[in-house]
Image (cartoon, rainbow, N blue to C red):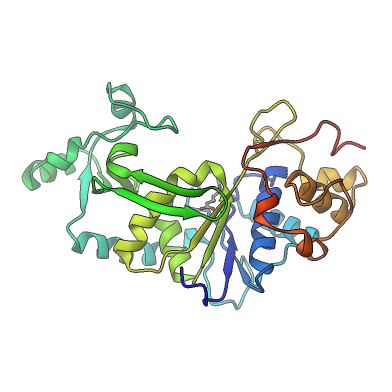
Amino acid sequence: MDDRREVVGRFAPTPSGGMHLGNLFCSLLAWLSAKKHGGRVVLRIEDLDAERSKLEYTRQLEKDLRTLGLFWDEGGLTEGAPGPYCQSQRAPFYEEQLEKLKSLGLVYRCFCSRAQLHAANAPHASDGEPIYPGTCARLSPEEADALSKTRPPALRLRVPDEDIPFTDLHYGPQRQNLSRACGDFILRRSDGVFAYQLAVVADDGAMGVTQVVRGRDLLSSTARQLYLYRLLGFPAPQFAHAPMLLAPDGRRLSKRDGDVSLPALLQAGFTPEDITGRLAFCAGLLERPRALSPRALLPYFSWEKVPKEDVCLPEGLFRK
Ligand code: GLU
């Protein structure tokens, strides 16, 4: 990345439920990392999956971010902004990006069902997804046309058999060979919904994002995204992955399990500063929990203090 570029960070929440402490933890780090360098923050609503996403959750997450003082400079539902910043409204833009990839001859139709892929005796990637064995890459155009009459295809992107290196701002040097790690990946599902990988790159590219801070669970998506940046001709951002904040027993926090939400904590008597200060303590920024707003936390922020290992919420930290 060109270090002279203005830092543009982002929040990219999926409005599929109330934000839990893990989402807020990551949002706090994204905000601090951008603002530490005098940057801006964009809020993009990742509501591609219409079944899981709800407008009421978007409203709630905007309210939660504002309550904590995690203000964004651009985006969200705000009227009048040069958006749209909701992915559900950006399909024509994704279509254009898909056309660019098609014109490079790198996109093909895939008729494999999820069940077939999972049943196949193919190796699985670290995230449990099967590595696509390239079955439909070998279809002739005539064979693909014939199959298209029986079911709608998904679209996949051919990946190279080469290492894609990058340096994560927090986890350091990384490399991944896409053909070994995941195989040709989906750009658009058979139901017409654009895939996260394409949408996130197209949007971060178009919105001028220069710094992506997000959970470590997406570290393994980064090489796919860098490959897409290269093909689509957008400058790649810097990536900083954050450790995951886990429940005291080491379990992943989940929106569906109703893990502590901000409204519940406020109800219990915590102030917004109590919450951001406790999250900063979990992130290694403070030696003990103190009540501090995001702005007041700026002098304490540095990626070097943030642990690499996932962080278990200390028992009782968010109990009154
Ligand atoms: N929308 C994704 C999520 O809520 C984050 C995607 C990203 O940060 O790249 O998990």
